Length: 322
Ligand code: PMV
Image 1: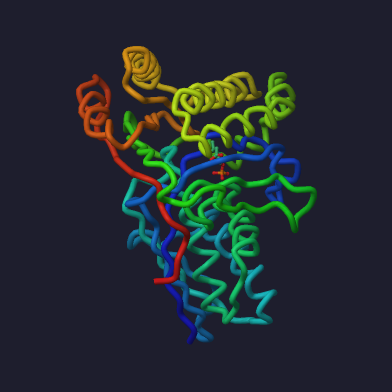
Image 2 (image 1 turned 60 degrees about the vertical axis):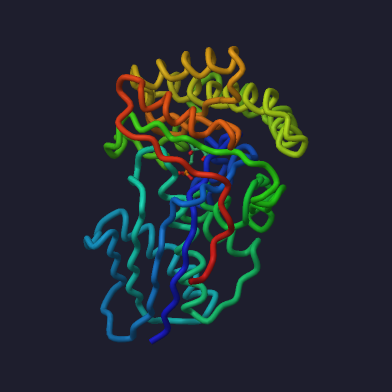
């Protein structure tokens, strides 16, 4: 029996990935930039056991079958193929944050799975290989493999579509205050969302403009220019949600509390508080601020109607074996 346990953080995208040029390989139509979230994590143990008649998946103590298990077995199949193994595995995973609510639970999950399963199979993959493997489970998971501030290059093919660090964890003291307005599991997951992104007439324009946004965001991070950073992440998030809302069928992830937070954040920034917002495929708002202001931002968010909780996370490290 070969067992390995790995831990990975979710990440928040500052320049978003939305839409694939190859849905099966999860090759994106555009590059993206994110920050790993410290304190939030998925811990996954994979053990290959010759006695198992099929793969087993247990998430937070509950056995999972159907689509969830199929997605995990797909990654295990890739690992078995690389390692020349023919045995099934038990996968036990736990999260310390709500899953499926726009907090990139699949990113942390598939990053931890890629690392734990490859190690349990006796493979020692490079960071780029791990990032590619995680990408096959969930595109954004490619970005939860490297540490700190991360860019996922779209690449030209399967081999060069992986993520790498553009700055280490301690480069810039950014904090994500995630305002939870709805912790329920979203109705339309990102896999379905990516598949219909191209039905929006706005998607081509969004994709064509991505190199510009990537450059502004990358430079804002490298130069620690908060004003430029806040403006570009809000612009990018609004562009992705415009595509979502205008696709067929339309996807509307925002709740009224989501929009109320946008207005507040912009007012706070205008009055000198360093904050900016970004939203993934859910209603919860990631309010990004400088570390010195995190306490104040958290307090203000908690006072807003419709906000049931606030999760606070700084920049997180790489996926690691524990
Ligand atoms: O990795 P997926 O398939 O869960 O897609 C992630 C999509 C967004 O969270 C909305 C954007 C991103 O880049 O993380």
